Length: 196
Image: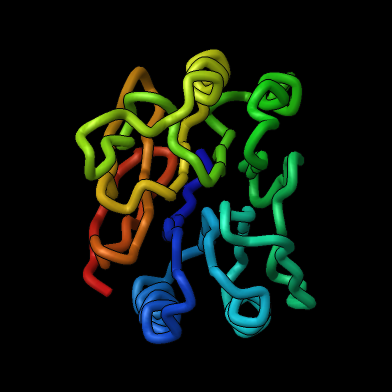
């Protein structure tokens, strides 16, 4: 059994203090990995944040991010690909590529897949300020088919939180209003929430 402690974040929105607090929490809690579901709002801020992290990090582009670049060897920018690390497979897809999730996950044990997207799946931590679902149906279908152990996303700030459904732990890690970070322990799917 492979144990991993994962800190889940999304939507830094150029908030330097928030990024610093996350890094301090990661150090204090001795996490193995940071999963970042994007939306830095500035390529310069993103590069600085990613280049300065001390932690193995898997990150995906958000809807406000054009390109994510890091020269930090601990950072993997996921772009419609899978990166294996310490027994788990970090699978990241951009908007519009959700139909590729099944293909990318083929042959991988679902209990070893950590899916990272910026958008939420339909009807899963996706209720907007207007009271309607803002998640995507094609993403929901792909997640149900693959059934990863963990799906990390953001985008809909007001729906931040976590929920378990049919064996998958869903974490909406959007930070701007919620200002809380979920640390997930795998394989148990135990979640602890911290203020940042």
